[in-house]
Length: 429
Image 1 (cartoon, rainbow, N blue to C red):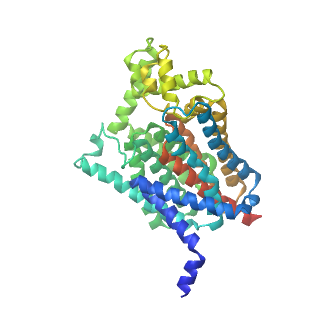
Image 2 (image 1 turned 180 degrees about the vertical axis):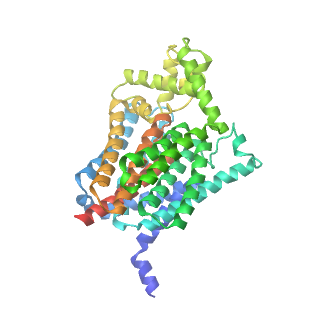
Image 3 (image 1 turned 180 degrees about the horizontal axis):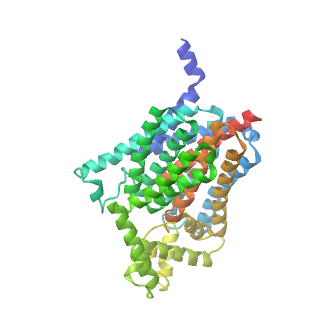
């Protein structure tokens, strides 16, 4: 009977714990199921805040500004979409993707109220990492046990797009290694965690996502810059040596070697090209550069409202007909860069809002990291700081807010981090 009573009293806690865990665990392997968990969780969070709206009053000024900016981000996306006459496939990208960023403020308040322990999150991320790696290993087995060193044409993707796979692997890696270093776990836990981190790093390399590679290299730099107190001199030396060795050794891995060679070759050829119709402008790198150029030209013509979500493709096609960019500029529905995508689809205000969200979130996490002596607060703040840095880097090579997987991860991870930091701040006061 006591069990039933506890279940009745804690039904919301248990339900959200299951949904949150299901989201993180299923999204990498069973993306559609993970999205469904998010949808239910988002609905519960909205209903919860309707009844517990007074929780908003307890937030500090920085939190309120960040949440207002997130609502403004979604609102501006809707406005520019409607002003431009609901262009192209924009309704799909707006109502089935970007509008979901609106869940972040509600999920933040719900998770803050429930206040899950850190052990819950670390167990969820450990299991999620194993699921992600299993999916990656399954793909390698499908390729008839091909040697990793011989995989040149193949990009590891774990059942999703390689960029998404590499990005999520890096986020999980960051969370686990931050937990191990900051909480100084026993040697057995460290060995298990570091083995998992090693496998995740291999997955990141073989995803061949260049933006994720850059973010991976930045991670130890962030440790040395923002959290040196968690590292002894010996650890700092080890991290620097590992960073140098990793960069040098990774060059001898065939996919990395080929990716770097082709990128360098195409970059030189692109800047030596004088004809907009040259074939080199249609390569992977050339296409990105042409799309970014097209985005800038779109912004010049539509500085206030852009062309709306879904309008980039047709606008880039019109520009291409003027022989100012290669036809590859309209080969995707977005310009493969979130900053340029904001410029093209939502104008200058859209770009400013997106940058402001990243900057204020980063500032929020850095201030918490700097001002607190509590180890758990430092852990969440430092992970949040890494998360925003990663997303800023990801945004340079992909439209992360226009793909549902990385957008939903952004929502739930920031809601989780902000919730735990806000709880600790309330307790401190």
